[in-house]
Image (tube, rainbow, N blue to C red):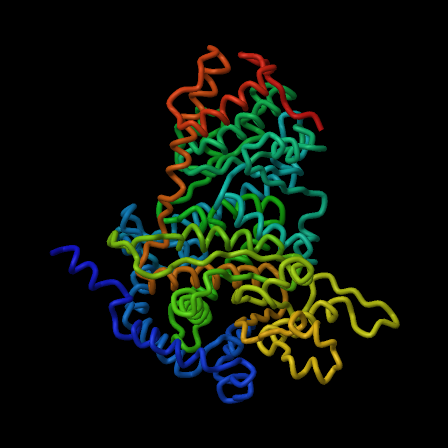
Length: 572
């Protein structure tokens, strides 16, 4: 009886979903070549907010499609779901938690409650602590064990503790204002448990001038803690064990384990259960390492950009709401048109780490097979995200996008380059050359090229099938005025909320990640086996034939490793 009631709550059982399913047949009869001739339609598919300009006129959608998508949003109670998130309700029901990454960038006087308590003062308490600490390090008043200033930072963390901060750092590295603040400083990230990543992260660094930020909420994440112990050994072997307290700080809530590790609990920066890892870049997870590199004032601009989109997402009507539009169009492409992938194509090298971050935000959030009530989904949900900056991507995978599978594309362009270059005598500047491609590619995808056009160009008959482009391939264009810290914050928040919109409509929990657990628990069994085989020469047991064969081969081929090896650190 309960299951039957739950099944009626699936979005695919609603009339708006059924109307959209039927509407697909109408859309199949259209082509973007014709849709793009409708000026009124195109104009209505352009939205501007706070300098950001979205043009989704190259989506395979009509005004009727959009009206039907708004009806679907209504059926999914999208407005109420957004309000529930902002009001601190436990919308992450499988973990019984609020979802309040918006509180991380809220103004100091805002009120955002979780379990009846305004969390904004706690957020600002940590932000103020980060401001003070980062200024001490940057000014040289906080020094290392030998009295030298700490100019190099290694941030140790994985997943959401790494991808978001890395994206923002990479985007700021060439921003003229941020460059000034970062002079003489380095920020590196250590994520992978692969010792090669350790070697790369410490190559050329001096322990005397290095500060390490260990990011782990529980201080138990296997990869992060092994890397942290490795870097602790690197520091203590050079400077002595007492140096750890001067050279290592933590972003964690487990003060007991932080102190046990050798880090002063006063140098631990908190974050909260209502912050999911992939949504934590605006917490101490990202703000601390970024403030050490660029100064808190730059990072505060990033937070303000994100906050601007937070307000827009909560208050703007759906037809003018950038994250809502992005999310609804994704649902349309995935669940109705049957296009499961999405290419994120920023025409800015500074955004080279944006697609990898959104990969996690999107695929870890919405890679679900059951509804929030635990009912298996009878429809496709979640997107396969990938991307590369233009024009690099054009010389990599655009062939498939133009003439192979249909993959909806997000084109992200910047009006003013962070690093403009002008060469006397050139037809256009370097940035104009880049942006020529940003404007051309969406039209090439939309219009394609017909056999008739090729015949008029006297193309050989046998080459016509190879040079024909079907067109009718959907994309959207997002144009930002520049790429400073504020704009980076806007871009991040727009995509975070887009993912939430998709999840709310699909009726899934976008804020848990049980799918990452199984592999980790199986790795524990393998870890025990490797230890037993290395130290006691025990045979491989308890695995299937394939895994046993692979493990045995691995152990035999690496049998020269001693059972109890002495400490060995990378040497680059």
